Image (cartoon, rainbow, N blue to C red; front, side):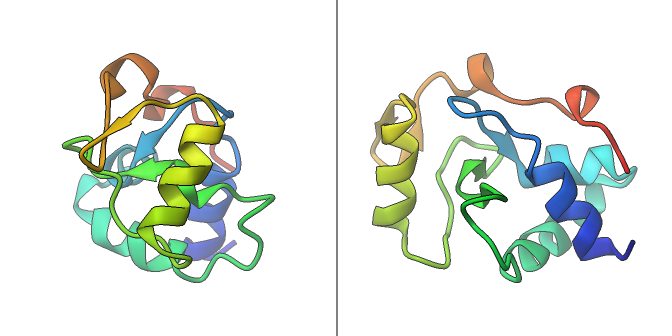
Length: 105
């Protein structure tokens, strides 16, 4: 399993109504310095319905980018009950899916 496959596998575990960060995924992979590489791997997501990359946000709570546009990412997050204000997830510390909860392949 290559790096991108591992990132997509971890991302597929994020439950509806929760978010994680690029850094948390990188931490689960054993190196927080790989946060940007995580983002680059998510750009290659072949199936955003099965692999919910819209649930991955920046460490400061900002929703970040999305291949289908930020407005669509916000729409999807709100549909799952996540509160967004000024392009930031409100109380994201309370709904974050931590590296410790992720099961590595």
